[in-house]
Length: 74
Image (cartoon, rainbow, N blue to C red; front, side):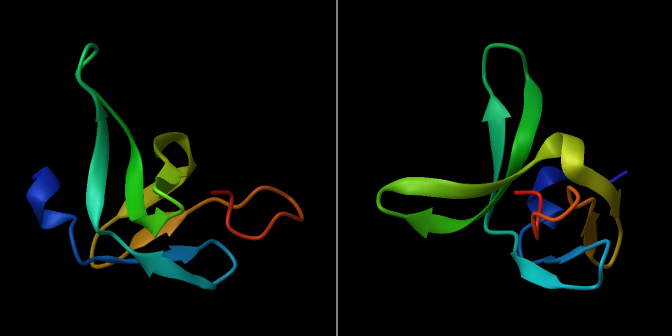
């Protein structure tokens, strides 16, 4: 089990071995208390996120599942 603070700085890779980015922050639903996704950066005032349901594994890296033909699944 990892603390959310331990995720910051982890590199994110797709299940196709493509580097996606680095975890900058974690997006949490404050009403439900659930993790919604991992924040990779910001563009145009909005956060770029990897949805929680695409995360396959978290260890030394974060491994995410990509949707067929879409690239990162983010």
